[in-house]
Length: 292
Image (cartoon, rainbow, N blue to C red; front, side):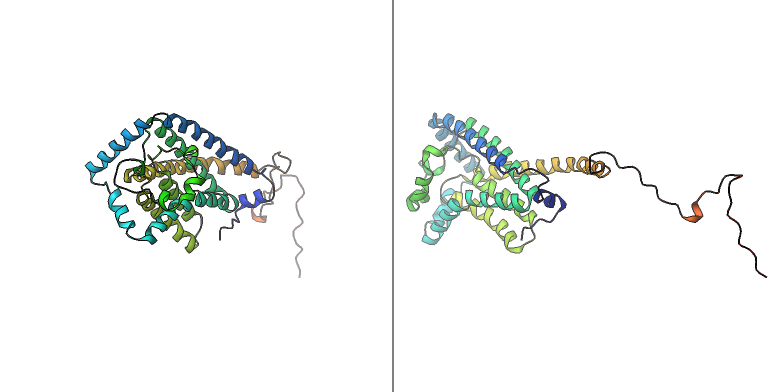
């Protein structure tokens, strides 16, 4: 389904390049430790997060997109919808992101690097926003909404207690943004219909779930998606600029021998009609004898 048979993938599997799994884990571990540093900054000033949340709601109200109450009002009427929204929010983010990363790393290495690079770039942008503009989620404000995850799925809050997460990092929503990114990368990495259907449905479901569970404002979803799309477009532009240079480097490499030197030019024998005539005074072939 995601088997990569490209020459670069075969070379990687053959051991031509050293394994980089440990390096990738180190990169994400460093990013997560950085996240903890920003969390400490925002947790120290909760009043700013609540003031910014009120400003976000007023901004949404001015645009007419303050749909948080209406979305959740529709969901809480059905136990099935509540459980579905909670399940998407809990199991549709990190599990999906990690699983997609592992599969892409194994079978679609270029797509994996695309996913990784955009995640790191947008994560850095998000950390700056979290530090400068912390926003409390609707579930922590005095809005008439319910924290459905805490009410109906207590295990999740115990698995990720407030000491391990940034309570005031609602803006932007990377639950929605990174799921959109996973969907885009997966859709482009395979032609399998089931995987592509999942790549389309999962980001839509997550965008709905983060609002329905009162974990994000509508504008958080919009900003998260916008940051991801801009970063993804930038990553593809960089890839396009690197490709001609990479191809030129491959051509130069192909002209070298197995020891790294340049291969001598191979002289091909010209057709008989194109061979030069022998010099004057040189040996000429004897013309065929006449019969008769």
